[in-house]
Image 1: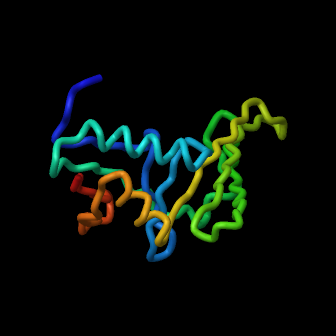
Image 2 (image 1 turned 90 degrees about the vertical axis):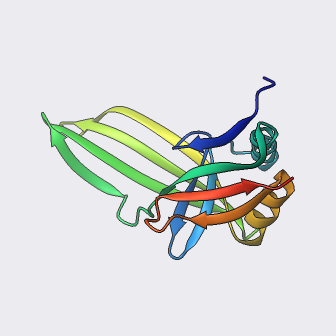
Length: 148
């Protein structure tokens, strides 16, 4: 694809931002850090100079674990697992999603996200050609600007 854009928006797509306390962590569905870097580089390649990369911010899910009745005898259950790596600014967040009926699991799925934050996040975004612009006042979007 040879097209360039003024802005690219990600809402739960290949990348997004999760607020954890007062910090922001980039999440990627690509569990390999090098693949995440390639993805960010590809996004930057398709933005014009000064173009915006806007990421949806998801609030921290403090009470995400547990079960909830959703009707018709179906119970939705979610459980998160954190796996910290040697690099203290990168970890995996795995979430199990389950649907139960009469105590039996009838459907389940596990999603694995690579989480990057702190100086590593800053350095990674800068290397891809992005400069942090702002988190919107309503804390719904993180905005980066292409600078190279």
